[in-house]
Image (cartoon, rainbow, N blue to C red; front, side, top):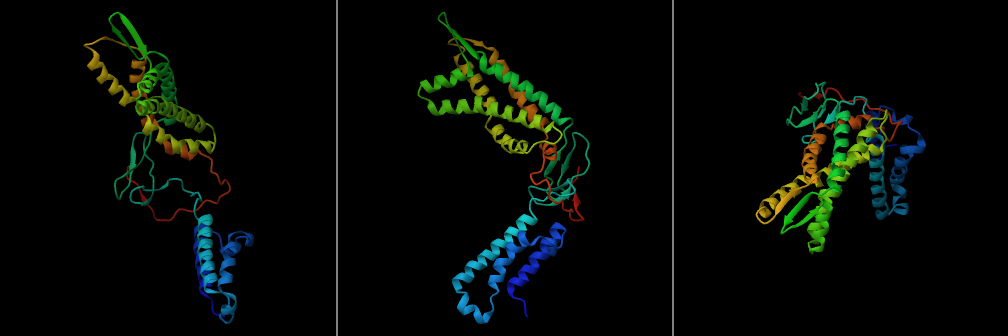
Length: 302
């Protein structure tokens, strides 16, 4: 009996999946993806002498779509999200070239041989340095938000304010949008940036980093983008220059703490190596078979 089109599709998919996962298609359990993909294919291959009575055009189209969805399901379950045996294999985010990372010295970087994109820069003692810098940044953050930032003396009167007090005053002056932006970019976002970094580094120090470390690692760059303490510092300096002739400006402890915090956050990010953390995170599918990397592969240049 001649094979129908879906049987040929079945054979092609089975061959591709078997090659990808390194197991014969026949060895997969019948209750799993094999039966899932086989059901719509069998329905599609109704003999031609019964097609007019059993399968209408509408049903055929519906089952054809089910067939395609089944094929996608099998390929996604059998091929995607499977760890490679060689953890040095990486795809370039710009040109998609699959390559192996070479062994590089601390401080050196690996670049894509095709587009010259920097793939990885190895940091020396990344986790310990990042932990120290993040802890120091946390202390400075607390000092900067609990002590006066600026004081003004005019006509015998003195007034001091904090970062949060400045946001509250903007709200009372009916500058609500600016007040919310100052509150989020100068107080909330830096706090989240430091807190997430501490959580990531402390979790990565465990023998097998838990999966929640990966969740924090995915969101930490967003907090870094919204943390704009340096922008607020520039605005404060401009304001100081403008009011210097009208009143005596008294810099507070928080102003110096914020200045130091800007450099600490930059040093924290430059010493952090996210690849080292990802290598320590426990896989969600702990029993997933590891795939062999295709050969030959280009090696990134260092």
